[in-house]
Amino acid sequence: MEGDVTFGCDDPAITGTVLAVLGMTFPFHKNRIHVNPLFDGENQLTGNVFLKGRIYGIVLIKAAIEIYFNKNIKYVINRWKHKED
Image 1 (cartoon, one colour):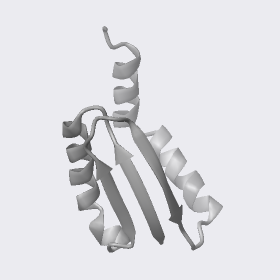
Image 2 (cartoon, rainbow, N blue to C red):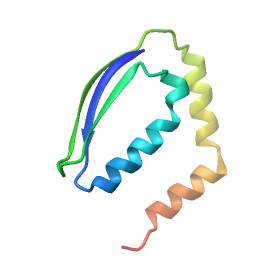
Image 3 (spheres, rainbow, N blue to C red):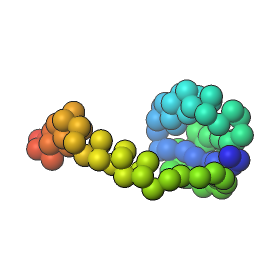
Image 4 (cartoon, rainbow, N blue to C red):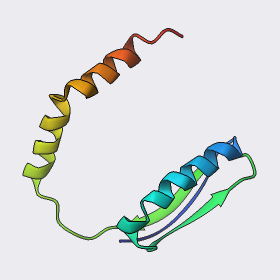
């Protein structure tokens, strides 16, 4: 896994929050993905990421089935559909 990503949001607070979440993913990418934040108030997402490995189809199907039949996921989706604006 290697990569270089540049991103920014209109609100610098959102950019900071995204950086905090990405900081929690450090054990997965082990500093091989370089993240460049932009705090100047423009929406931007650019970059290149290279991944190498294997993903077996049965793993994806199993994950999709588990997510589909999870009652908590269905509850959240139902709440989003019926959310009052």
